Image 1 (cartoon, helix red, strand yellow):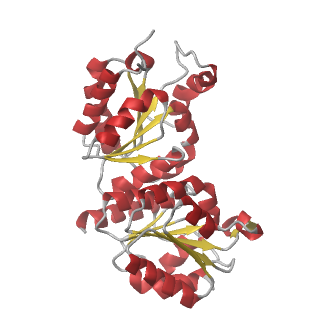
Image 2 (cartoon, chains in turn red, yellow):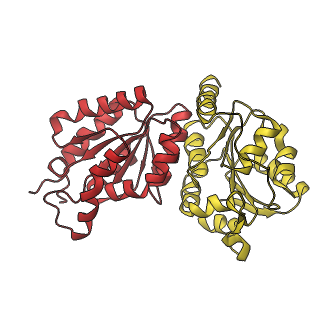
Length: 172
Length: 187
């Protein structure tokens, strides 16, 4: 069994569905396996598997202008790889982009290669003036997902939810 | 073949199509031929015009989407061709104007100038219909065939490395964005 929490992934997925998301773009990463599988198995949603995360910014921008609600599922290193698209597509054109970013490299990280990205994720979000909140407890997931969507659409701006280890990973 | 003449030739076909273009010469030339509310010009984020087209095509399968891309932009998002091919939106025509250079920033040659073949790359990525055209008649014929085929098509149009004298137009980016969204809401 993978220590990635199926129960938490289900709570997140249901919250995203409830907030109207019908298109997911995703690049697989360990913490996202259940979320991606849920999207894949759900006939009500479209899952777009990306070659690189920045594509997802364009796909979500197109989906938004076409009237569909979408979300991106990616690792924080995918967020790093998407920054030009976020700035020069989503921010320049005022796109309400919902990004779910797995927050690797935080306290408890065992993979040495994840640790640099973890250290810069929040500073980059702040530098880009992207409002963000943590998802670290299943009890507040639903409200935070809804509130993130509400702000994204009222501000016409990208917002981020950081998927934290305490929520996603079942081991200490 | 110039890009301007190619755009002018197929312009009548674009009246009811959802059009996404890249920045620079393509956007300025299409606007000078005649802006429409169903045309969106991605004035930055090089490489993402085809991804935007995919997002629109998947969300609104009842609309025919046309993306006007360029060699420099496609080369920045080659992986996007594999994503396009994977989801194979039947309502998307991907036109790549290949002038073998980054014209708006000094005309430096891209890799297509030394033999990289975008139509070949698209075909190898899995795009079901792909080809290169070099004359206006070939381009117009390929565009009409793509419309009739009702399948994902990449048309690489080899064009001269010439463009307009300037790239900034009277149409504000946000005006264009909200007008385009409104058109899609109403159609």
